[in-house]
Amino acid sequence: MLLSVIVPCYNEEENVPLFYEELMKNSGFFEEKALDVEVIYIDDGSSDSTVEEVKKLHERDERVKLVSFSRNFGKEAAIYAGFEKSSGDYVVMMDADLQDPPSLLPELFGYVEEGYDSVATRRVTRKGEPPIRSFFARQFYKIMNKISRTDIVDGARDYRLMTRQVVDSILALGEYNRFSKGIYGWVGFRTKWVEFENVERIKGETKWSFWGLVLYSLEGIVAFSTAPLALASFMGIVFCLLAVALIVFILIRSIFWTDPVGGWPSLVCIISLVSGVQLLCLGILGQYLAKTYLEVKKRPIYLKKEEID
Image (cartoon, rainbow, N blue to C red; front, side):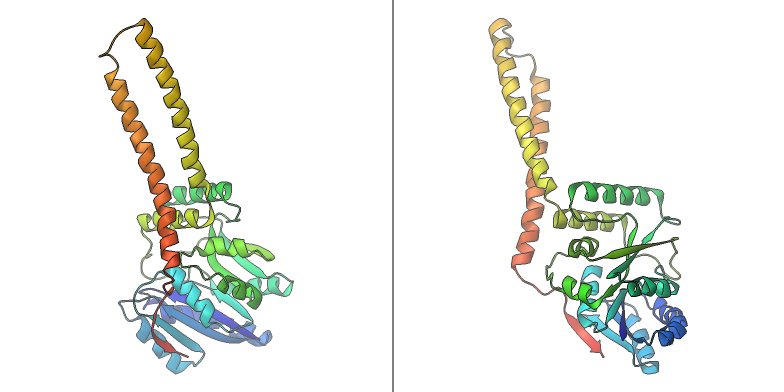
C-alpha cells in the first residue's frame, strides 16, 4: 500500500527539512504496516529557497516529489494540486510548519483500519493565537453551521487522512472557488475526529493575516450557503412594509397636523439607512455574481512551473 503525504508550502525554506525529519521518525510504523510513502511538496510560488530545499531532499530520497507553481495561487489551489498529484491508497494533508504533528499518524491510521473513510483533526485550544482572532474564528464556525447544511467543525485543521475513494470524490468537485473545509463536509463519508492540543509553528511566521482570514471566511460562506441572499430579500420586504407604514403615518399627520417643515432630520436618517441597506444587498448579490463569473471563465486552478517526480 502507498501513503501519499501532501505538504503545501509558501516561503517555508526553514521548515521543509525539519518536517521531513519529523515525518521520517514514523519510518518504523511505515515498515510495520507495509506502507510505501511518497512526500509531495507543493510550492505555492515561494519567493525564498523552498524549491531548492525540496530538491536537496529529493537527492537524498527519491520518494520526495515537488510541484512548483508559476506564482502564488493560494493554499486551496495547493491542496487541490496535491490531491491530483497523489497516487496513494491513503492520502494525508499536512502543513510544513509542524503545527500538524506527524506523530499523530499512527493513531489516524488506526482509525482508518477500523473502517473510517476519513480521519480529521481539530484543535481543542487556540493557545498562542491572538484573542480577537480566536473570537472571530469561533463566531465564523457558529455562523457557518447555522446557515449551511455542510458540517464544519470548530477548530478543524486541514490535517486529514483519507482513503483513495474520498480523495477521488473531492477531485470530482472541480470548482474554481474552493473552500476545502466545506468540501470535506459536503462529500460526506464516515469521518472520525481526533482532538489535539494546539502546536505553535516551529519556524517562521504564519502567512495568514487577519483580513486574509476574513476574506477566506467570506469565501466559505458564499461557497456553501445562500443565506445571505435570503437575508437581502428579507430586508427588502421589511423596508417595503416600513415604507408603507411611514406613508400612512405621513398622510394622517398631514391631515390633522399641517407641518410641512418638521421632520426633515428623521427623513434624512431614513433615506441614509435605506440607501445603506440597498448597497449592502447589492454587495451580497455582487459577491455571488463575482463567484459565478470566475467559475464560468473556466480558468485553471493553478499553473505548474516545475515538477519533480
